[in-house]
Image (cartoon, rainbow, N blue to C red; front, side, top):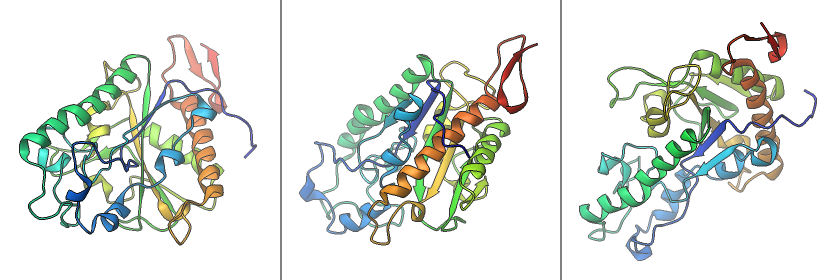
Amino acid sequence: MPDTAPPLMKELLVVIPHSGIVIPAEISLDSLSDQFPELARNVDWYTNWLYDFRDLLGNRHLVFPYCSLILEANRRPDRVDDCVPLRDVHGRPVYRVGREPGRDLRLRLVEKYLRSFHRSIEDQIASGAECLLDGHSTVSARGMKDDQIDIMNFQHSALDDGPIRFSPPAYAEAYADELRKRLPDVRITVNASDYHDVYGHVAAAHSVNAAGRRGTRVPAIIQETNERLYKNPDRTPNVEAVNRLRKAFALALAAAWRRTRPQPEGVVSAPGGKRSSG
């Protein structure tokens, strides 16, 4: 594909909920488990860079800075055991025995950090965002291959009454199609991993299965990128790969948006995503 600059995409809101490593001031560092450095390998490392397109697209960008082992911004804030967990996803303790935060503190953390983060997403949508990308990384698990990027527009977790659609299929399909053009050596899939059964609050709470914004909800997609595509074997960031990928993501998002964005009345999409008067 030609290496040209994409048009600005101020309508795009990128949310990165799992790259943070900050421990909130209310949590004492010496209360953390001796295993904490090992547990922290499950953070979505470097996704704050991988999905940062502001220099390319001029888009909106929100990163939750706190460590997801302590504050899980992608879980329901009314379920304190999920969003302020005492154990990681594998059941290993986050804290030393007897040093866990009490329920009152955990509830205060929910209000101070988690609910405020989700209010900031609503504020970005209310002020003009029209679509949302929820950016993640993964290891080779839950059906994800070493060379795979999966684009998702739905979930069906144990907390959902039925499948939740984050956007019409055209959004995910157009983005995946544009990614394949720019990353022919990468396995690009749509709704092919097993992450659909994991509850994600960012998309569930702020999306709508419609072509365009509805109140403080917008069409959204989730992206899971295998970390092997941008990490060195020693788990340090491969700077060249990070920048190759993020530029491809930005170009693909801009091209997909031209194909799928809602059109003003009397305007239709012409071939190639260009607009013409009807």
